[in-house]
Amino acid sequence: MFGFWCKEGKGRYGIVLAVLFSLFFLQNPGIARDRSSSQTSIEDELAEAIELIFQENYQEADSVCSSLIHQFPGHPAGYFMKGVLLWKQGYYMKNYDSFNKRALKWLGKAVKVAKKNIKENPKDASAYFFGGGAYGYEGSVYARRKSWLKTGYAAFRGIRYLEKAMQLDSTLYDIYYGSGLYHVLASHQPGVVKWIQKLLPIPSGNAELGVRYLQMAAKKGKFTNLAALAGLAMAYVYYDERYDDAIQLLEPLVERYPRNLDFNTALINAYFYKGLTEGTVNWDRLLALVHHTENYVLRRGYSLDPWWSDKLEFIAGYSLYMKGQFALAAPLLKEYCDKYSKKGASYLTGLGYLTLGKMADLAGQRQLAIRYYKKVQKYEAMGNEKQLAAQLLTAPFQGERPLVRFVGAYAELPDRP
Image (cartoon, rainbow, N blue to C red):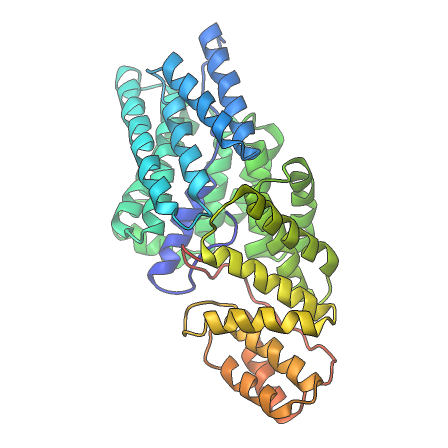
């Protein structure tokens, strides 16, 4: 859930809202301090469901969610987690929207129960937690569908519920995860926020405050500490270019949850973007992560959305190029570029053609290299690919590896990781 979405226009609107709530995950139930046996049971089962979801053990997680609903039909926790589970199951899949349809059903039930509890007790922090979380995931679904008005309304309601929960009890440290994530994202997408603010009164972002909130949740949160670590890693990778810090956070998470696609893809992105920016990275480790992820997907029989699987192949190809294994790299990069040759289809195509041109030059195929360099100008850039291609049109690449000065990864569409 860490690399998403589009660079300009409406697609950028989806960035804040969908990522904000795609990671608005595993909220503390906001249960009162008296700790009755039923409250303890809700917390215990909630913690178990969360752990199983992180493990991607979806069948057992579904059983726990159903148990929560059966035991506590008047509490929104079970309905919310059932919606989250379905959303998470489908996130990387080719048929993700079929999962989202079912997720919306359960999220709607969570909102309904939360509203009922709020009406009966306006100081019920638990109801605000889960109501806000459910609205958040609804926003993520609508953003991926590019239903922008529905996305904006869900974001508006979710933020208001979360802020109300914080007002009711600021010592529930899991609150700070969702709020921190919002501030980080909104501060880096001011155009999106202003667009929404024309319709709805949502707050502006504060990146520094957001990072502090995420750090607080990571340190003191009961249910959101791991998600907050992942949120911090996201901020480091996509906005701050603190790739080593992101890798340091994510490596232990991948070791603990080796089947978790979120953590694996986030760590892959951290290594990849570090390599693009700095020119050097542990390319062997990156290749191992890609192969591990691909093998896991194959063993589980997942039918991934093509963009995800194609991006993994691209990263493998680029890593092989950086290791000097051109015969293995070239087919992977060419296949990717051919598939995403339509302008605007991928932000990686220009980089792919630039790299193919370099390999052609090194093989003494100057005319082929020139054709590739000319193609680079047609596509959006992650950094200085177009400038490098222009330089290499005047003089062949000789292996000095001029860096692709990467200027930010957060430039993707809802169907582009």
